Image 1 (tube, rainbow over the protein chains, first blue to last red):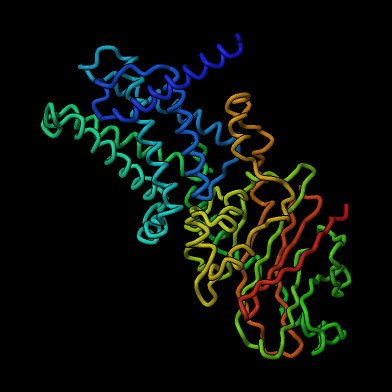
Image 2 (image 1 turned 90 degrees about the horizontal axis):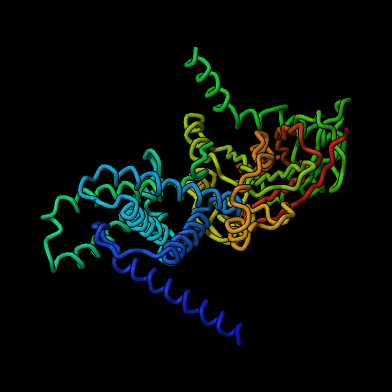
Length: 205
Length: 266
């Protein structure tokens, strides 16, 4: 009986966290300060899903998916998000609770990188990377262009969501703060996806 | 001073394909084989040779021992009459084994004898970090790799990615003898041992030389005694043995492979 109760509690907790996770996904906008409080369980699910797509994006780009290396890359990505989001949030005078908002911004960036990785995985069924690589054959870095385009596509999805969720109240284009954070988010996501599909990630040869 | 060193390094890199394949005259070696009655009109097939200390050609058996001092090897190809003078492609694959098992994180040394020297530095840069894991996936799972699709493989005079069989023939497959670390390993690494994620022993500086794949464009030649293709294996000091697989795509674009498993003499 006690076992059944424990299982029931665990299932309920998982369902709550999953609900929190999907709430984060649906409400992800560039105005991260207005996002609801994210429970730790929701953050874990966001990170787990990001790790999964990061793994498959590297798989699709014929990069090493060696377990120990990818584990290191995911931890490095987490540190990158915490540091970059922490630093950026510190410069916004309108953000009151810095740590909570840093977590929210990291969550938005994480969703962006996950989506970017998702666009790379999408190449499996809808080939687009080969075309981009041919376009930028003489460019400085074809793979960096692939990362930038995937990140831009992810940024557009979040942008559309931002417009959808904020337009009823006010014009996003009339709000300079949202535009500044949108531009910063693009930078964070481009760098993040770039790190995922750079051959050696954070450890260039 | 720094620029001079860079120029010297880039000159060395630009010469790499020449260094790998230029050696004793291939024709002379073939003539020597013919004179000794080894290569003749009836000797169809493909065989691997080297010259011993006394200068005599020695054919390598499928399982054999070889001195580390051998610097040049010859691949003897004798096609059918209908193949004479036609173009084809060979793929040389080398997996050098050390006392440790082969790690999928090893980088693959790539060469294509069509690479123009002016692009070698760019190609080396684009292909840096290509691991055995990624190389295998590109050839077996049809994934993307800018380095492999735009640099290593070629469309003319022979499209090396024309068919699934050709694409797969470039993979190392059973030469590796180890299984890929999968997703469950990743999860266990994340949950159990993130602090031990990188093992320093796996990142030795010699890793880049232990797995190689070369594309060699050649013509069957017009001599009835066959064609000898020379190459420099450049055996690494740390290796105990080497698995060599040479795949000939023939003129019918149907790849067939031959294997050698060689142990180095101490």
